[in-house]
Image (cartoon, rainbow, N blue to C red; front, side):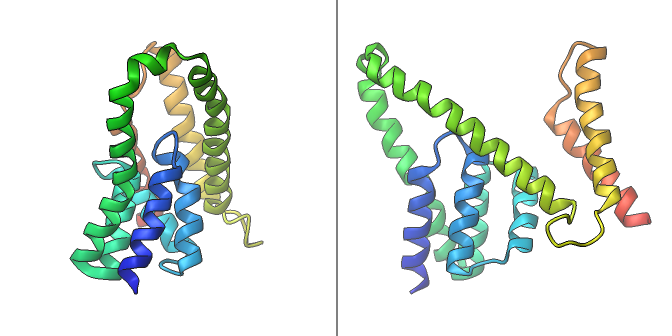
Length: 187
């Protein structure tokens, strides 16, 4: 039954996604593909949409996948399943926080998770770049995608150097959307 699959699948995502939404992308991809809910291309599109819409990426993806597979009830089940573990963990941590922060074993566990989270985010980013440039399929690389990535990366890091201030993620998303419309919509 789809509702049980959504519950179990997104409980797994909620339970094992330490480090936030970008870390969860690899796990969501594995679960979504194993259940056959979306293909890899559609999932990549949904990741892009989820990144550009308000709210956490995990919740946005869970809600979308749940609604496409099980309607409103499916969206509710998937969304609840993905946030429930974090909600319960935060409740427990808040009750134990003062004691835990003084515990060297707990501090060691958190320090040990940081490199893992960085590695997962980096691997996911590399995979998305690789997939976006169509290098995986053996096709000709998507030159406009490569150029846009370089321009937007240069804009992001260049403005940080020039004006000593970070560009707003909202502004970068808007600039990316406009560049995408110009490059892919007009040409």
